[in-house]
Image (cartoon, rainbow, N blue to C red; front, side, top):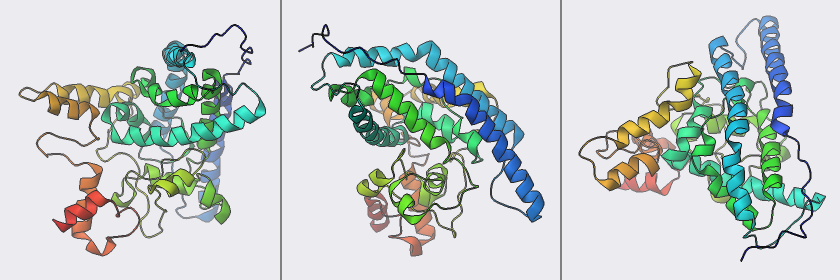
Length: 332
């Protein structure tokens, strides 16, 4: 039953927090570049942290494009969430308690949305943009998609609204979540204190998430908190003996922002449009995991882990190689 909105409290005027933070992001990128440069000069040897001018420029262009796409097309996602609002079960209002409750709930929703973005190719078509850089620095945090509002990804956030968090509050805390994640995109910070690493997402945890090493594939999906990964078995610790290699399994090999933004979407259309496929096979190319192929000619993350374990059986059972699908395949 729809709610009567006549007596609702007026929603606060939430600021466009990401737009306000954008200049600070660019300043932080510049400071990290200088920090890495002077540290390398002083050390006289290789140190952690790399920048490539074309790569960083592409990432920052993607970030600006993301802001513009939010301004131009954000009404699609917001309109959907406002429509869902009439079917809410509760109403948390806009107090401080509602803010912190929403921040925690949204972080959990971010976790399972992030997982879905890696397991459903249609959602991956947008999220792959963020993983496409082969470098890992603060500019990588700005490499964001332009087509988020067309994927229907917002549908996965609907439970927050149904539980009584106003859509404007949900989007605001979502911005807070993304601002937190900016600083974890760096190699210049090694480890945080153990208690912090146990609870919060950190540069070490998120380096794992961006890595293409078989051990690290599909791991560490948390936003602010890493506890969700620890609870649901997707946590993998960074290891000194397995340094992170960044990017995507099949490198995109371009710095052209338009190609970065839409290459995967174009490839999905090509794959699903092949002649002679069944409806189920076409759906697999759109909604199956990245790497799905109807003839088994491509590799999904489980296949890559299984292939690695066949070559290195001594790693079986270690973090990152404990998936049932991997173990079963080895036993066949």
